[in-house]
Every structure is written in C-alpha cells, then in structure tokens.
Image 1 (cartoon, rainbow, N blue to C red):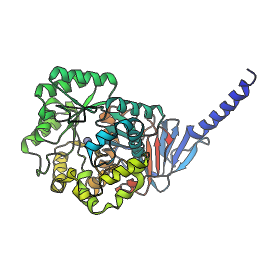
Image 2: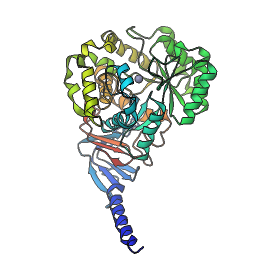
Image 3: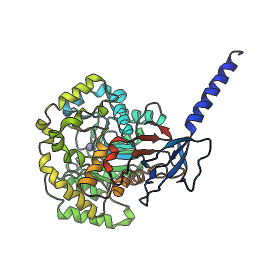
Image 4: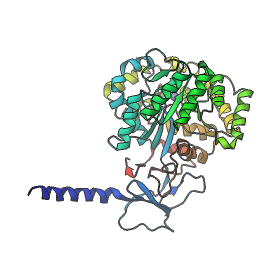
Length: 445
Ligand SMILES: [Zn+2]
C-alpha cells in the first residue's frame, strides 16, 4: 500500500502533463474556409478544447487565452477535414481482383484495411464512406479507429455489397439476395451487426420487389441506401425504389444519360420534400488513367506504402508492371470523353455532387485519390472550388446524418480540421500535400 501512493502521484502528473499538451490548442493565422460556402475568414483563430471546437473567430475578434498551445496556420488555407464518400479500404491498388480476393482475406482486418484508413487520414481525409467489405472486418476496423486504438479516418461502413448474386470467390463481402423476404433478412442482419449504410449493386438483375424490399427495410432501420449507378436500369430502379445516393457516372462509353433518366432525375430533384438527390460521380480513376499509363512516376510515390508489409507492396507493384495491358482499363479511353458531359448533366439537373473516388481500385491509392478527384472537378470540368470543397465537407456530413458533429468548422463540433500552405481556392492541387491534419482534436500530421 505504501508504494502505491508515489506511483499514483507519478501517473497523475504524467496524465496532467499529457492533458496540458493535448487539451487546449489554437490554430492561428490562416484563412478559414468553414464549410458553409460564405467568404473565408482571414487571419482566423480556432480554439480547440479536447476533441471539440470551442470558438471560431479572427485575430481581430478572438483572443487566444494563455493556456492554449498555439499552432500557426499563417500562410495556409484552413478547412474542415475532408470526406471521401466512396472508398474501398479492403483493396490497395492491386490490379488483379480475383488474385487479391484469394490471397489477402487473412490480412484485411489487421493490416490492409487499417493501412488504407491511415493513408486516407494523412491525406487530409478525416471521414470516409467505405462501400463494400467483409462484415466483421469492416465493423472491427471502424470501431478500433473510433476507440482510438489505431489511427485512421472515421469510417462509415456498409459491410457486404447487397446484390443479385456474388461473383465467384467474393461471397465473404458480396451477399446475394433471393426474393424480397431474403432481401429483408439480409438487411436486418446488417442492421443488427451495426453497419452505417447499405451498398446496393446490380439491382437491375434483381426483381423490382427485391429492390423495393431492400430499400424499405433499410429505411426502417434508419439506414440509407447507396446505389451503384453504372447501367441505365440500375439507375431507373434505384430512383424508383427511393435510394439515397448514386455512385459513378456510369453508362460506360455511351455519350450521355438518356432523356428518360434525365426526366426521372429532374422529377426527383424537383421534389423538395425528399431532400437533395445526391450523386458521387467517382471520375478521377477513369479520367486520369491514360495520363497515369504514360506518366508512371506517381506510382513510385511511396505514400501508398504506409502500413503495408514489403511483400504486399511488391505484389501490388508487380500487378501493374504494364499499365497499358490491364483489362480493367480496356474501355477507359472511350469512357473518358463522356465523363464531363455526364457530370454536367447531373449538375444542371440540380443533383448535389459528392466527392468520392473508388480509391483502392487498380493503381489508385488512398493516399492520392481524393485530391485527384478535386483536381479533375475544378481544373478539368471547371467546377467552382468552393462547391468542390463543400462536396467533401458540408454535404457528406449532412448526408451521413452527422452534421451536428462534423463537416464544418463550427463551435461544438469535433475538431476535424486540416490546413495546407497556399490558397486552396486558387490552387486546388495543393491538397495533394496537406500540412496539418487534426481529427477529434488530435494532431496526426
Ligand atoms: Zn466502388
């Protein structure tokens, strides 16, 4: 008993020191884009206490109390932590899916998915929607990040894809549906396991009764449905059934969305009672393929190695030794010229676009995809940079139902904040190397 007291005192002192270091921070001096879309705040001051934002102002209006540790953001753009609304943490850029799915399931939970989540975080992505993965692993990795036992972006996971039938060898992360009752049963199982969203794919191969049952059951459990939107009938069915978000620009190399689909989309965006229609076009992987094929230096950027064993890195590298020969990208050059038209059609129809990337697909890494998507939107398609930033902050948080906690730099919300040297509204590409990453008040970069 005698010896316990000094030990206790020692621990107490260590803890208090830790608190003093981590508890109160002030981000001071940078230009703040808070996520609401209005004019940026120059010479901003953000006071952070523990996990939360306490006050937001400027050097002229808000004094930094003496007990705050000052982190200078002079010369930087400061913005809410980014969201990527379409990632696949279970893959890391390997070009051969059937090989990957046979070889790496034992490493998914402890190595692959945590590495992806950490790479996202260090790229400034503090939250991500993970659309398709094995159930137990997806939940375990999400929870480990939320508990703070491993570093990573806050994940909102779907667990397994819900579809007509799994492709051979993918049964662990693709669940087939056989009849409306079976669809409801599968959704109940996912809801009970605690997934955050439902990922629906190949719904054009299902009966309409199945699609409706899945969406209805998901909504009963307060789960939103994210629908694959590659083929025309996938889009029609998902719109008819009331899916909550649509993925990819789709329609392969066809030049544009057909009139009847545009008509359905406009009917939907005209109905304010249903809220905005959200779409995550995931263009960068397709748009940049030919450039990457011919300019491979970026593949040597080692940001995507983080958290992966050397053997896995070598394996991934070998898989794209010949980027020009990959079957995955066969049709991509024909699809590329159609992307801008389709994105513009959606924008003109009043759809709310979200930043999402499909990161993890062949040659596409979690450490790089998100800023690439920004680059294509802003520098190639001419989308307003403020729109793009809100598509990766404000809107994703609202869609996910966590706008009271994240998505903007606002007092009372989690301190998920990034900062990057330069003017991000003038040069969006500076997002490729963010200088400061805070998640729930903790500085990771
Ligand atoms: Zn995807």
